[in-house]
Length: 115
Image (cartoon, rainbow, N blue to C red; front, side, top):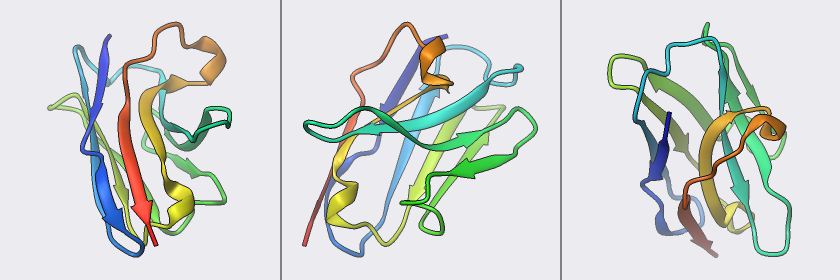
């Protein structure tokens, strides 16, 4: 399954963005999916995960502001990002979780938040 993230952009602090991740195949399987981000000079980190059953977990830094969801018929993963902060600036990627199992990364989508 190939995954392509989109929807990034440049916004002001406090604004919102919705990222989408289109999958080339079904995302209804038994794998946990995640949104990751990588800021310049930092390691790629998981910010939100969703299980096949819909259970979600968020990184402490985004909990209460970001919402991960998926549309199985459309084979699409989403990340609704509200109350964006400058520290959310990063390239965002979608993929399976955990990161150690991932062998291929797409180009991601850039999110830039200015104060």
